[in-house]
Image 1: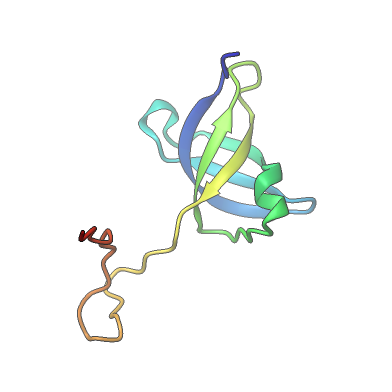
Image 2: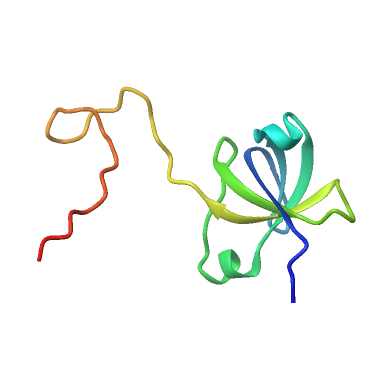
Length: 98
């Protein structure tokens, strides 16, 4: 069974009732396209909160290019934010030592 979905990245512009959001696409495939997106079931189960300004991953089908489904919310990064040690906050993968 093949999934006929298009994965895009976007930024939430506005929040509506019933876990629905207006999202502006930032991916090159559909730059600045506005979608009406609902929250995927797995994100509802885990009670992931989405706010305007959050970066998200969207899935949409080629059948309806105006609607999508939010499947992932990226962790917020704040430019210039200092970590507790005083160095700029960066994400480093854990080192695997055997």
